[in-house]
Length: 194
Image 1 (cartoon, helix red, strand yellow):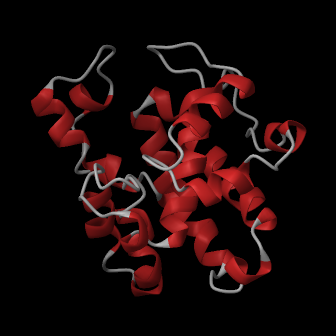
Image 2 (cartoon, rainbow, N blue to C red; image 1 turned 90 degrees about the horizontal axis):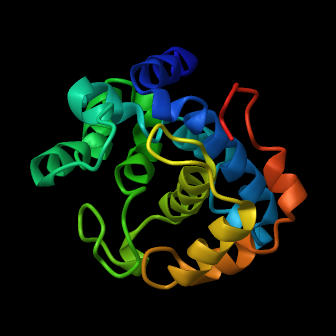
């Protein structure tokens, strides 16, 4: 079922071709690098599903907004920012996913409180913070219709620049320890992804 949903999401938006699987792979690699104390508080399978399903709400975003080749205007951006909330609504009948709903809902929150819902640092669930870093890395390094992919080095520079404001600084320090070669193994086998 989850594979079908992800396929539906990505078929509607050519910019997401492989993104959900990439974020899932990155998240599970990141999980392996977390200190044991953090890992013991996160169910790995739940984290894997949340990472895969983090953009399921984009099924509810109109195609003219989802596939706009240029910058979104304020109204379009407001519509796009509703995708985490829509994802939770879509998944609410599936009670086996109840525990991951906050992780999906809050994956665009920022440590400084300037995210979609205004949560700050400790209010954001740890798994949502993890997915946020992986989502950011994927967004930077993937090819999109409106931009070329950036290098690993550029992605890491950007991620480190926003540590403490957008992304959790402690988690970014851990993410920095993952070798580039291991991150590269997370790229799904999708033509023209990178």
